[in-house]
Each structure stands twice: as structure tokens, then as C-alpha cells.
Length: 344
Image 1 (cartoon, rainbow, N blue to C red):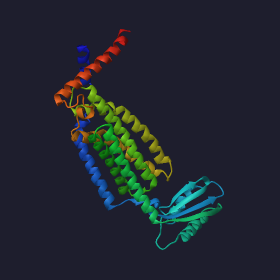
Image 2: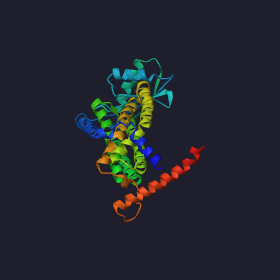
Image 3: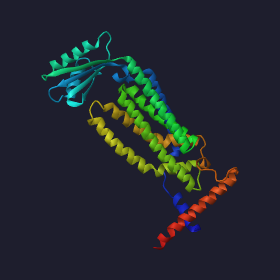
Image 4: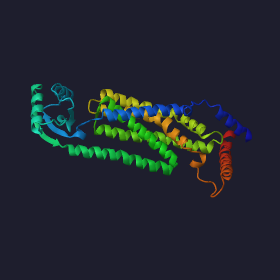
């Protein structure tokens, strides 16, 4: 039995690991620079809010045959409606156009301008079905509700991770999510890509994706703390990140392939949605590897923090002895189960 254990330890020590945690200070500096750059971009350039947030005019048109959405969008852009949002609505013949508000121009005048532009560039019969003005008050409510949705999501995650693991892990997880959201929003500020409800939905999706990656790594860290009797918390965390590396790469790669295809071929409507997800998943994969665990380590998380006390009121040494005893019992049970298989 002793020989087997020594062999197991030798095998663990011989594993070729990438020293992710050894580079965590460099990663923290890089992340700090990116976050500062993102905040500066948001403060200086601001976000290019879409009509979902700013309000404007909604025009519904009906064509007598399937409408060419791209051509409609190009015609409007060529006539000064650069931020017009054009999409099919219900069927290929129905089109919904959203126009940002213009000072001194009411909705009926804008709808007449749009109809005139489209009829002058298109021989198809076009029927105007609906013109509706969405006031800035609705946009303000959406902005507030969207911001609150992100805050509530982060608070829920903080509580969930604290209950499942340990408070310092929840701090690491939430800090990583704030890191992901800030950098993603910063990219939209610097590029001035339109920020609408689809982008907000993408950011909420990024929070879920990044958290899932982080939880998987935390689960492996907790498991390794129970299995590995040697090594510092940094070593154990580094081992967990390496063990999850293949899964993380494959999951992120396959997701990115789909998103890049959507970004290139998905059309104008989901272009920014795909862009937000691409940025968020790249940053989220990086943060679940370097940021979440590194912050938990910086806060001093240890093996005892992830395991229930073996004895109530016992000293640290007594706890360690009890944990070792439990570990040896688990090892003996595992070897007993494997013994019949070895004989075969």
C-alpha cells in the first residue's frame, strides 16, 4: 500500500503543469490596465445607445413580396438615417424600422420621409401599417432596469457561491464577473458600436458563461484540496486549472466558432450581439483561469476553508490529524474497491 501511495505521489509530481498561478501577478496588472482603459473609455466617449434606450420612432411597413432588409438599410443610411434599425417583423414581407429621435421633427414627418426614400428606390408596393413614437422616458426606464438586472445577478451570484464554497471564493467570482462586464462594455465605448437591448442580453449571457467556467474550476480546486495532501494552495489551484484546461479550451473554441460565424454571416441585427459575446467569452475564459482563483488565493483561502470541520472545537493541528485520518480511510476504501479489478 505504501509503495502504491509513493508511486501516486511520484506520478503527481511528474505531471507537466503550466504554471498559470505563477503568472497571476502579471495577469492582475494586465487586467487592471484593461479595466482602467475601459472606465476611461466609458467616461470620455460614452456608449452609443440604440433606440431601445434613447427612444425614437417605430415604423412598420408591409411589402407585397419578401423585402430586402440589407437594401432598405443601405438606402436609409445613404439618406442620412445612419442609425436606423431595420429588421423583418413576423414575416419576410413585413419590416420594422426604428429611427432615433431628431430635434424638431415629429414622428409623422419622419415616417413620410422614410416612406418617400424607400418608394423612390424601390418599385415594390409598400403599405404603411403603423407609426409609433417611443419617448425617452421608456429609454430611461430600460437603462435603469438593465443596470439593476446586472446588479441583481451579481448579488445572487455572490450569495450562491458563498453558500456553495466559501465567501472568499464568492468575492473572487464576482470580481471576475465585474472584470468581464467592464471590459466588454469598454470595448463598446471605444468602438462606439451601438449598445442596445440585444447587447445587454449578451452581457447577461456572458455573466452566466463566465460563472459556469469559474464554478467548474472552484469545484476542482475543492476536490484537489481533499485529494492532494501535499502542496500549497497555489499548487493545488494551479493543478485544478491545468486539469480543466482541455475542457475550457474546447468549450470556448467551439462556442467562438459559432459566434464568429454569426458575427460574419448573421446580419446587421445580431452583429453587435455576437460581438459582445465574442469579447465576453474571450475575457471570461481568461478571468476564470487567472482572476477568480487568484483573488481567492490573495484573500488567503486554504484547505480548511473548503472542508467542513472534522471536529467541533478542535485545534488546527487536531483538525489536520482528523482530516488526514479521513483521507487515509477514503484511500483505503478506494484501494479495496480497485483490488478485485486488479486481480482480474
